[in-house]
Image (cartoon, rainbow, N blue to C red; front, side, top):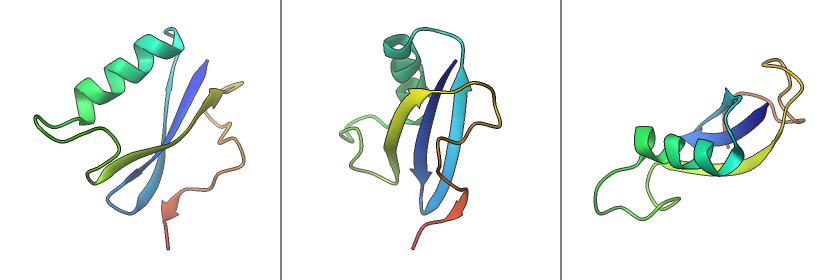
Amino acid sequence: MTRITYTNYGDLEHMYSEIPKDEFVEQFWAIFGQQGVPRNAGGIKIISIGHASDVRDTGGFGTGKVA
């Protein structure tokens, strides 16, 4: 399982999937990307991409507001 940890306009969140990592990243940007906005330049920024044992595995990251 792959985990993407990202900030969503100041909130730290996680998304999980069983699909291959590269395909998952493309799917993530298909959902959250905006036309004409470079990736990781708008309000949505990927912090980490890694393996997760299950959906409770946060990779050491918390959730909530990022200071």
